[in-house]
Image (cartoon, rainbow, N blue to C red; front, side, top):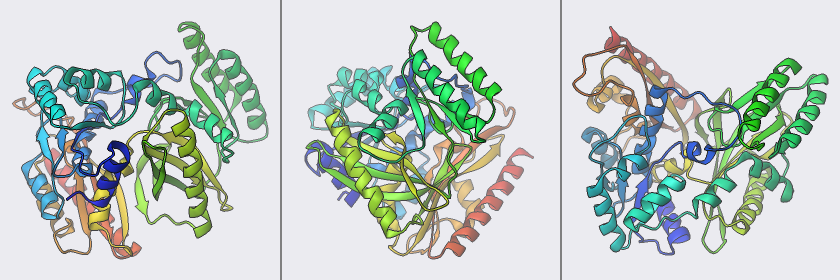
Length: 460
């Protein structure tokens, strides 16, 4: 039986709670949306890309036992046992014959005729495709195996995921946001830069954002005019070489006491459901995780719920239905900025929703984050269990760590059979559950210490 969130998702997007889905964790779909757009240059490292592409394993948490999940490689069986032992019903896993670390799972599937044929059989049996987000690649996959996607077209998904769209939509529905400008043309960018000079002259800070940047990439914080001029020239040069189009936002950097992420669902009939709000953990604009419950007043929660209704109605008018996550912030004086960025796709918090319902009590606190590891050789899930010891969440326990993604630990490792090479970076994603904030902090600190010791042993 699907858990509540999954059941609601299927009802809202497919019309029936028992619709079987094929989940596809095509993280970094923004790279496909950004193709041909002129914004800020983004540096991509092969190792970092490999780790992000293995975030596909998060789809295991959103799917239920009647669904299928396509992953780049089979999960560690001990990790599956960890999830199943906690009462999480798991889907059937499909894996392409060959995967390449530097590309998304979608591209891996498109090169596997046998897997495409299997997906075609699932389509004939009534399955629907549930990707992280829809680009032309996912549409090509859907066409190849006649597996209709739940979200709308790639054109709609791209349009509503632009930060330019976020700013203009917030203005259109009357929601507070930091002062700024959305830019589609070099002339609009020149006007935005002139406005930004007045902010800098008054002692403020501005941020220039690529329309399709994600988790800190494609973002430049500017505190002086010289830097502003360099950024302007850099974007202008790229625009001149690509048809005089730009896709950036220039905003005033706002002081804050908290970052937030709230989540809502826009159904196929236009109904908007406010799902939840979490306190987001960020560093330098880079997403680090979530904490619940968010430290908000009842009035602030009501304001966010109203913002979701307004945004959802506008998204539906513009042709979108599906999952939506919105970044927001609270100023030190308690005022909300309900829109910093709209992410009309699955979000990290989407993948946590089902296990949160299953494992977290109404009065408990949680911390979802990733733990960095520095390794020379891959680490099996059993080794992690040994290192974490009693900190791992077990059936019936009131507190502990649920490992939400193990694949990212070894994603950047050398290929199997290769001799050990230089050390590589891995990430262990998890959800820490506890009865009190103090206990949560203590567990989190001890996890950090134990994983640091594991890294030291592995690289010795």
